[in-house]
Length: 259
Image (cartoon, rainbow, N blue to C red; front, side, top):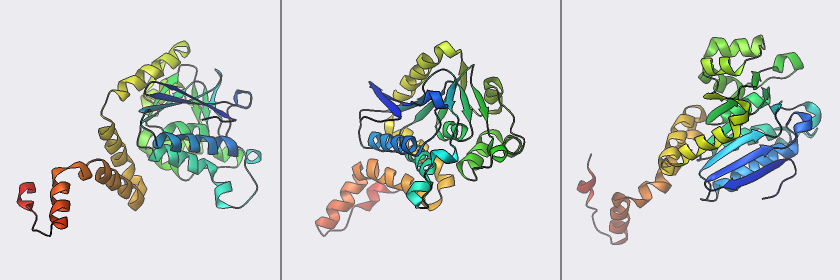
C-alpha cells in the first residue's frame, strides 16, 4: 500500500501506521483521515497482520487534531466527517491497535489515541482537549470514551478547563497504559505489540467486540454476534449437525448440544 500522508510498514505480525506530516503537527487533513481509514480496512481483509501500532512522525507531535482549513467545505456526508470514519475504522477493526504517542496529542489527536485499544507514551508526550478554546468540540468518541477512561468529573474538567495532562498524570488517571523514555518508545511499542500478537486472534477479536458493543448499540451487538457466528459457530459440531439434518430432511440430534 502506498500513501501520500501516512507511512505503512509490516514487520512480521505487526503493522505500523505513521502519520507523516511532522512539519504541521501531524494534523488531520481529509487525505490523511481517508488514508488511515483505507489502510485499516485493508488490514481487516488480510491475515498477515495481528496487531497495529499507530504513531506520529518526528519527535514533537503525535497529532494536533484537525482544523477547518484542512477539511473540505462540501456538505456531502463523506466529506465533512472523515475523522469519524477514521475513528470508526479503528474502533471496528477486529485486531488490537496500539497508540505509540511520541509527542503532543491534542484535540482530535488525543481522541485518536483514546479510540486505540492500548496507549504507550513517551515521557515527552502531552495530552489535551482544546475544543471550546478554538471553536470546536467532539460530542461523540471524544466525550463518551474519555469518560470511560478517566471518569465523568475528570473528563468534564478536560473539556471545560482544557488543562495540559503530563504523561505521568495521564497514566495515573487511566488515560494511557504505560510511559517510557522517549528514546525507548519505538522498541517498547513493538515489544507490547509482539506480546499481544502471541494471544489468540479470535479471543482478542471477541473481547474487543464485547468492549465496543456497549457504545455501539444494535450495530455493536450485531458486529460481535456476526464475528462469533462467522469465526466460531459456523465451525462447531452444532452447526454441522443442524445444517446436515436440514439438508437430509431428518430430525436433528439436538440433545447432544443441551446446556
